[in-house]
Length: 32
Image (tube, rainbow, N blue to C red):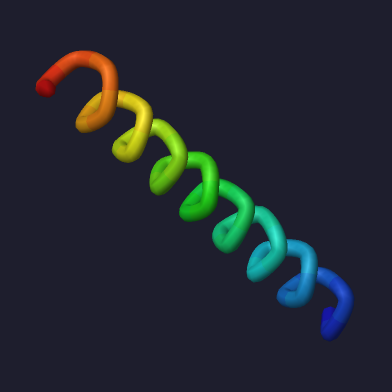
């Protein structure tokens, strides 16, 4: 169970990082 919650936290943090990169990409290239 402990490793299960740790996996969820890893997935959430990874998706947050991907979202931050996507937001940076959009704000940099699509809305100058």
